Image (cartoon, rainbow, N blue to C red; front, side, top):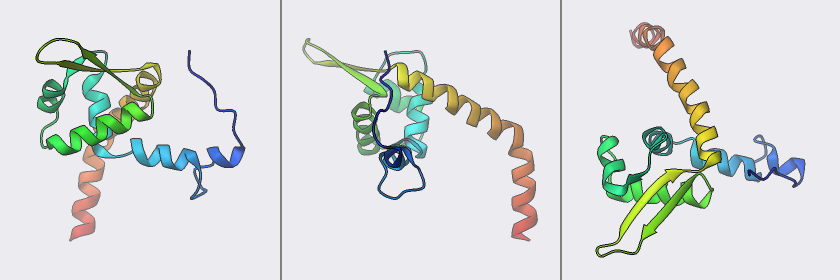
Amino acid sequence: MTKQFTGSPDEADLRRADSLAREIFSDVANKWALLIIESLGDRTLRFGEVRKEIEGISHKMLTQNLRMLERNGLVERTVHPVVPPRVEYALTEPGQALRATIDGLCDWTHRYLGHIETSRRRFDT
């Protein structure tokens, strides 16, 4: 069950520089985090499998973003006690909910890609 925020309204205000909400938004609104969440989807993947899914991500960036997503409770990391250790990653319930929002952003991108491309060309000339 997802816990609801019970702190002060200031903590949830994205407009405030010191708000927890802005810190969380900053964490998850980066290209790597969005791509990791989208790649995991409904699946459980190992580190190397996630890396193969995301063209251009370095080992370091994948590690940092998976740790950040785990810290924020969006990704669950499971270590299986075998030799060599097997580590798997999956989205938690809040991670799945965020994925639905990311899917909307992906749909928006596909819908308006042509418009944006035309606008960029017009702007750049």
